[in-house]
Length: 275
Image (cartoon, rainbow, N blue to C red; front, side, top):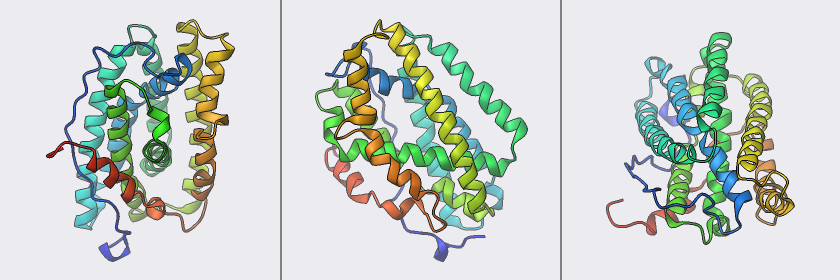
């Protein structure tokens, strides 16, 4: 078991009950058009079901935790993820005007039900650790690269930056629970490899469906705008995620090694008093 002295100090986890009015957001809300809009939109499909899975996998071990600080972080983690799921559910209801969101949302629960029937609770927690690593890195990229959301609809910018901040605030919770209940280096590395293939494969499927429904499946311009955001551009996601993804395989890895407090504090300074 981990004790308080063994845990790395990190940013405090604040629960913010924020809501975003997306009713006036156009279908293609990114100034670079369909491609980058589709990239962010298709990610939202995963969140309501995914975050419920994260919370269940962490809370399963709550009775075994002895450290009161970690127990408090688990509670705050669950509350943050609950609000994320609520806002992305509303986001996805908006997307359903144009895309087969209900069908895509059903595929993810089918996979998670299979996982729950085949894998132990600890391996399910290892899946959560891997996906939380992805979401925290994407959040870090959003917060450290203002150009990603420059000129987008303000409600979309606000939603994604809020989500990014909170993913960084709770980036270590699932990992610390995993260590506390005896999770091993070999297990988490093997699970990360499998999760990486599944997550990016599912994201690619969502992207193709969204591009087709947008009428841009064969648009070189739209695909280049998307791929320069994700793979090839100066600020592309892959350029900043490959190194941190490899770091996960270090024996001494911990999510808080990357810090992130300065990015969180910078976002806080942009918020109205009381947020």
